[in-house]
Length: 398
Image: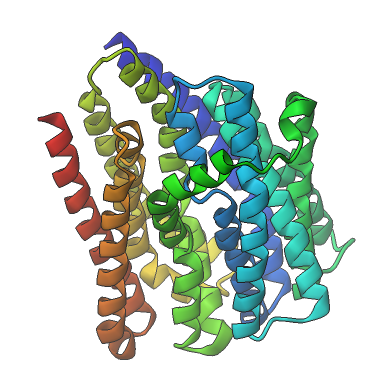
């Protein structure tokens, strides 16, 4: 129980930091939502979700592979990892331009800001893995605290009527604020930053491909949902669904906090030939379910008060999305076992299965029930993913 207590303390610390950052970010979100019309906010939501989702190409599972290889501590290994990010950045730019073109958002101004955002997120993602491997959780929290504080300053200026927002300005602030995390670059040695493309860096990307595809599916979920929501009512549907989705994503932050702590911890256990403690999984899962129940009761009042009734329609689907996010949080943090056991292919099976279930359900439910159908598709597909995850982890336990 001593190990469990130690894990819970670390998870609580990281969770508190992530939730604090989310609350700061929510101030800016609230300022944007109040400043723009529902349709304009929908466009902003689509841009930001696409940026964040496509930035994950620069992770592509390499972060977790790097951290899980706890037995390797050489400078060569770190440089191979960082070098892989340069290759992934080039891929991210190509994919981003294609997606922006499909969405009809390929203006010169948006392209420049979008690419700048990719650069900032690329550095942020790389630093996250370096700090996670060393279990430097204060620095991990600061990676997002600094950008959140920058956005909070602009939010306050908007609330005081000192500064006004348009869709383009709001997206610019969101994209460029991530550069605040570059302050922590000083904690990385100069010889680790230099590009040095080798076969090993390419092999690292190849090895992470199953996990990388799975991550893109998971991280691209908000962008996919926003695109489907747009089909139900232009950008208005995107705005309504985005508010509900962002509020329910508090459980995504909790899951990230748990994964951040358990991955290096279980990697160390594997290194010492110790068994993974599944008691942690049970305790953390129960805690997430209890939090979800409380969040559902509080959610409807919160949406009405925070946005002056502008997004009341979001309250109708918020409870469903909170339940879905809680279930997703459980199976997502359990993915650390697959990295520790060197079975990233199982993660791909789980996430492609969830995606397939989601798309089939959307095809049948969205035309009939609109945003409610989209929300129910989220919930059922997440339940399927959790069931498959439990099945695989039971095999590991044996």
